[in-house]
Length: 384
Image 1: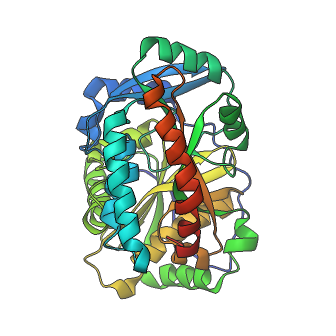
Image 2: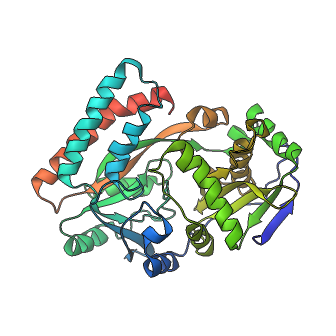
């Protein structure tokens, strides 16, 4: 088992106690990149390709992933997957009604265009290989110098920054716009501004907390992750994100889970049964005053009545509330998250192509306009 920082039965959900502000200093970027370079990203995440570098922008060390342009990888390194393969897979899961045919045609056109542009040939800045890469206190210092330096070394690559939005990183977003980056709408995300006001008071949240209290599970904050627990958490993650949702989600190995805990990339909360078996797990990234949960997992072989998904989600909100953090709920499960006090926002992939030929630049501006004009309103209406 992992080392337990806190192991105790949970109180009813209405009995919250705030432990005081927790301001994340961020993971160790140098150690993160060093570990990735030692074994290669694909060894730790089966559907990821790329070379990991450490770059400096202002006073900030940032991981950079350089991808060759190949297709079919997870959306965390492949914008083609984010804009074509993932939406195409979701067409069968989302009821778009009469718009389904139009959406299918749009995705097909984007497929042809993004392949021609070689959009996956990219230098990806501050990419932590997570569904959401929070940027912490990097406000864009040194952005232009970094961009010029990377353009000189990779003159045939786009430059990308994922997880850009006006809620979690308004200063960085403004700096990107001022530096001439295009912002392509990427996902509808769910954010909670004040956990005590917007989350803790909800009936659904209180019911989630009671479900945990009645379950007999014991919550543990893991600080060191052993081999057996790493395998179990990777299994629980795959049950949800890969088996239920999409193989385009990053296919994390047990080794990745251990690297993430070792480098401080995320904090890990688990709920164990009386035999010590992990039944639910939540990874929590803290950057600045924001927490996000890039990974949840629970035993989907257990009856739905046990509420393990609800318990895993509650662990995240409870952590954010206790530490006075805002919560970035990432994408998906919109109705569930809205019931628990979240509101929607749109996040973007920032792309710079000023050093590339005209034919690899202007189509992206058209795509950005079309997504903002047509896709964003649909996302907001459908609560995806």
